[in-house]
Image 1: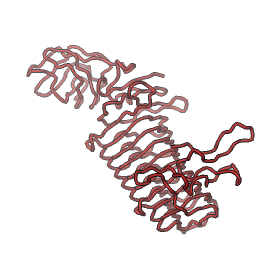
Image 2: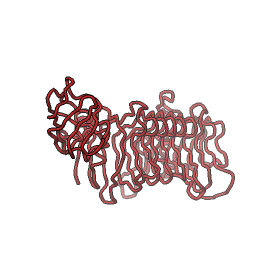
Image 3: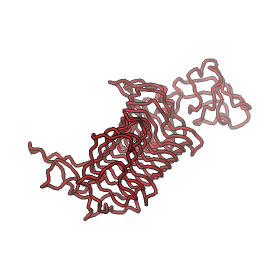
Image 4: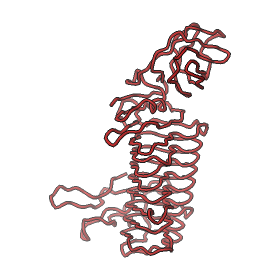
Length: 428
């Protein structure tokens, strides 16, 4: 298990030092027999010597064969064709010897490895995830800014719309963790895969991409991620994904969409998405869902709340469904008693329910957000959603708040052993 580093501004994707290469100015061809066997297009290499050579980081535009590559720009200060060009080497194992591109790192890692992705300068590249981790040894790519572990974000940028997908993979069981990354401005998707599962995605943002922000298969976990301003869905998945403390806002289609079945949303916020805030379009055998302590805002009834294309098992607990065309819609084709609705707030929807019945614990008062106009969905003092949620504290004790944001006085359970542990949701 190894640790590696990437740095777009200062890194170098060449692993083995090269000397005595020949550069042809007219074609921008760099030649040395057998030197480029492991090169790929869009590598960034540090050319650091040669007659009239400008020492700098250069992009490999294309690879002709093992002996020849084309550089994207001239490397000389005049029209000469130097024969003594050298390319420095980087092992990728320290900040001072970092690789330049995330894609190069993806092609070098093995199960159990970790890559620290230096932020500060955007990575303008397309990345292909090629090597899978294992059940016992996953692979991690984690962004940082000044020092490793500082929680800073590193950005992959589509330049904008020039590049197609931020990260693409055809892996099935990938066993990857992506953390502290922003993927934005790609003409198609930020993350594009219909096969990937066993992904952990933590504190990542998927913004202003031309289709979905993030597209994946099943059995993936998302924590504190956001999807904003994508032309398609914010988050798209097949089935059985878990979203905790995530936000989808101002996307051109749905906030969250399950293509084949359902998933679990816990403490999530979805608002101002053009179609539905949550859409479950899968078959009847898979279309289950659980939404717990979520806040959904259709933004002046321009978008729908929750839509499920098929009956199965559905749980809606402690959720705010507000200002939607239809709050919660199920099909009329089938009756299923395996549904649970507890302590939800429905308000200002054109229609609260279609084929779903109100429960005795629902409330219809205004949610009383602190500053809805500026997307602040915390609950103001006096909000009807405060202490109105369902938990195990009993009827005589204040409940947790309804919605994704818990106030300081929100209730929760104190266990009989006196530990004082609370079942209140994470405050976001």
